[in-house]
Length: 385
Image (tube, rainbow, N blue to C red; front, side):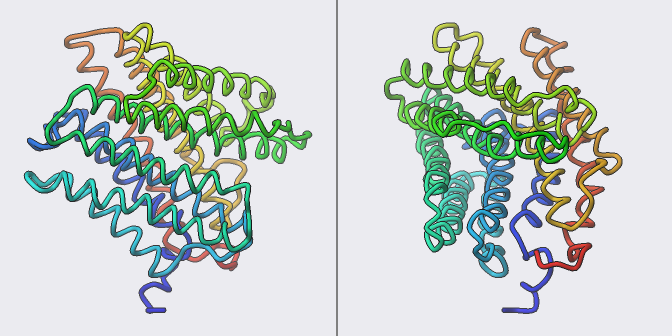
C-alpha cells in the first residue's frame, strides 16, 4: 500500500467522509440560503435539494455503513486506495455540479458510481461473512443510487413533476436509512449509557423502518402506484413514531449524545407521515420535506457523526465534548425555523431560509472545528481504525 494511503484519514470511511460532510454541508447550505442560482442544467433549487440528499446525507449514510459493517461482520473495513477512490467519485460529483453544460451529466454519473461502488464495498465483507442480516442494507444502497439515476434522467429534457418525484424518492430513501440506523443504534446506545435493559424490536418492526420507505421510494422514483407509495410512507412514519415512544426514557434528556438521536428520528417520523398525507393534501409536502431534510438529515446525521466518531477515534463518549451540545441546539433551532418558514411567504420566508441556513452551517462548522483534528490523526488509544 502506498505511504499516502497509510495516513490515518484512509483507515476507515468515517474519517474522510465525516470531515467532508461537515465542511461541504456547511458550504452548500450557505450557498443555497444566500442566493446561489445553480447552472442552466441544474438550477439553484434542484442543486440544493440534490446536494442535501445525495451529496451530504448520502455521504454520511455510506460513511456510517462502511464503518459499522466491519464491526457487524468482523471483516477488514474499506480503507486505503479503495476508500480514496470512493472519495474521489464523491468529490468529482460535487465539483461537476457547479460546471455549466456537461457538468450535470458528469455529476450524475460520478454520484451514481459513488453509491454503487459503496454498495460493493459493503457487499464484500457481508458476503464473505455470510452476514445475511445485512444483505438488505447492501440492496438499499443500490436503491439509493437508483433514485439518483431517476432524478438525473429527467434533467434533460427537464420534467418538473418527474424531478420533484425523484427528489422526494431520494429523500424518502434517506429516511429509510435513518430508520435502519436508528433502529440498530438508538435503543442500544440508550441501554448502554443509562444501564437499563435494551428495548427489543420484533424483526418485522425493525425491517419495516427500512423496507416500507424503500418500496415507497422505488414507486415514487418511477411514478408508479403513487397512492400505494403514500400509504407505505405514512405507515413508516407511524411505525417510527411508535418506536420513539417504545425506546424513550426520561433520563435521555440529561444526555445530549442520546436526545439528539431521538430528536432526529422523531423529526424524520413526522416528515414521513406528512409526505404520506401530502398525496391527499399537497400543502403538506413542503412541511414533510423539511421535517426530514433539516430535522432528520441535519439533526440525526450530526448526532450520529458526533457519537460514532468518538468511539472510533478512541475518545470518551460521555460527557459530550464542548461545544458539541451547542452545535446540537443550533441544528434544532435551524429545524424549527425552517419548519416555521413553510407557513409564511415573502420577506419573512426569505429571512427564515437564511437564518435556518446560517444556523445549520454554524452547527456543522462547530463539529468540523472540534472533530476534524481527531479524524485526521491516529486513534487516541493506539488501536487500529
